[in-house]
Image (tube, rainbow, N blue to C red; front, side, top):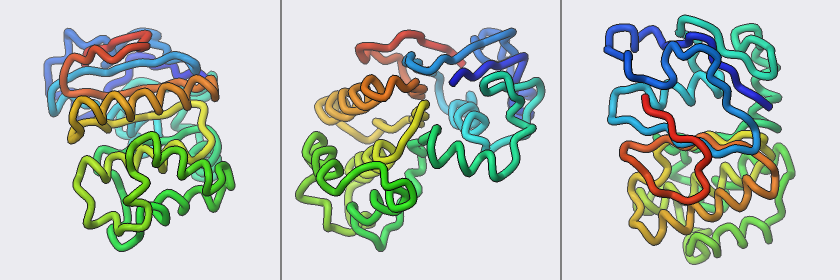
Length: 214
């Protein structure tokens, strides 16, 4: 799976100075499966917009984006449904959890569609993130940092060739950030998947192949 950007820029970003961006309006920018990318920028520079374009949520952009030589704008809703089911996974900045469901139920929702992992595997993910005691607690009563870990586990509990992670460590301390990142990297490595991670600040996380400035 390869994403290629040809002079792409979301329409709202046209009002900003993007002359120093390595992404907006870049000629032939390629993101390859199997590599890890971090996209660094302060708020308002379009990090969420970039991932939303890649996930098919936003289509309001100039230029073109290709997935394996097919224009994203040519995909039908059925194409996107299949991609999000089997090839693309996303950790949303807003998390998109159901507050009145437990941690385990939130994770199982999408997994029931794909049948990708067992309950035992979910418990392993929870153990890696120190979330075992919270599997049966309602997501709505967890701290935001704990909710971020739930969203990470949910994203990892499905098949994917690319994982899109939107500021998924923003409310975690350094120890939990490193644990969560190590788990994400491990899952990406065993699946030979690509990773696109956005961050507000410069990051020194290990194993990143390419850093991109917005």
